[in-house]
Image (spheres, rainbow, N blue to C red):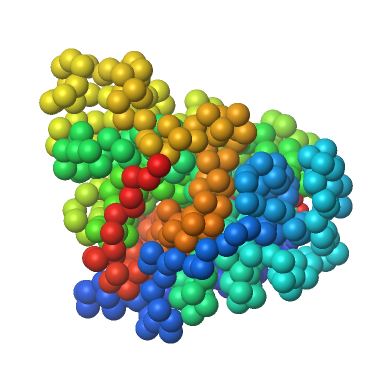
Length: 456
Ligand SMILES: NC(=O)c1ccc[n+]([C@@H]2O[C@H](COP(=O)([O-])OP(=O)(O)OC[C@H]3O[C@@H](n4cnc5c(N)ncnc54)[C@H](O)[C@@H]3O)[C@@H](O)[C@H]2O)c1
């Protein structure tokens, strides 16, 4: 278990519970009361000096992180200068990726769980890309910013409200980027829907649906390394939405969350927790460690978010039940609806037929509404791959913005709000589904912040 045991989790949970109790008390006093006093300047729309070359340090090059080596190796103006991972096997694999690409070997750091600090001390690292287990995201991103680097952190950005606030505060104090790398915001369909929303195709937005429904019980067989070796324990620690951001990120961008609207409160309920224990019983010997865990996370968690402007978003999490993959990706407006998995659209005005029937043929919609960024980079994205190209496009866009002095598409406030669904859903589930307030991580700046541009 990497650097995070049940005791430290419980300590963090107690703090979270205390914070959400405070949040509840403060609710009547108005949402601005939920924000601690700022000790830095807002980083909304932060632009940092243009970088001719972006020198990349990677922490965690396991199942997810190894893909980033490939992507940055293939992006003009990016150079991987340092890699850290505590697992010597994945370090060897990283060395091979670099030598196969015919590139100079970066510095490698692998001795001890704090070896990443040696990477952070290097002068030739501008950005730090963190793809480690969840419990490491907060300390690594925070220390990266304090070391003067820009932090790019895998999902979720943090796992307690305190961690999320601390990352907001550290970004504001250091004036560094802290972007949670929500790759799904760069999927072709999600980009197209964002473009459609901005062109008013759906009318006024009312409601969204987002999910991470992905059967991952098999990861429980990863015992010594890989995702399941650290992720399984969360099913015995938290009952709520463990992984909210993949579906929620794009829906939040459709709705201009933190840029004209913001999450106000949520209510959450979980189904019984049955599937993981049943799987352990079926797949492992009776005395195996997987059979000794008390799986408490409901197999299906459903949360409802209310935004300040009154819209609703349903967010689901299910990595346990046998069913097809879905992120829902549904957006309903006054003129019609788009839904994903499978893609379908129904409109009152401007559709291809009656709104009583789904149009499942996306050809005409792609032709008319593909996002300009996809039109520009989609071919390269598909060639380089990573979840259909979204991973490459995200990395490309990060480097593009840094080299051209443009603000990033996602900021620390987005990462904090989207990730907050995990601790808030757990607090709501533990409290019979009673609502829990989102703090305003932007401290009021959401009211004047400009919506994300349609770029390309
Ligand atoms: N955005 C996506 O589509 C997506 C997909 C998969 C995983 N993820 C995220 O990526 C992260 C990593 O997941 P994964 O599946 O690659 O897990 P993994 O276990 O395969 O990789 C994590 C790596 O971090 C290393 N590590 C652990 N502690 C470390 C430390 N103190 N210092 C340096 N290295 C350390 C491990 O040795 C391992 O190689 C998670 O946050 C996960 O949520 C995102």
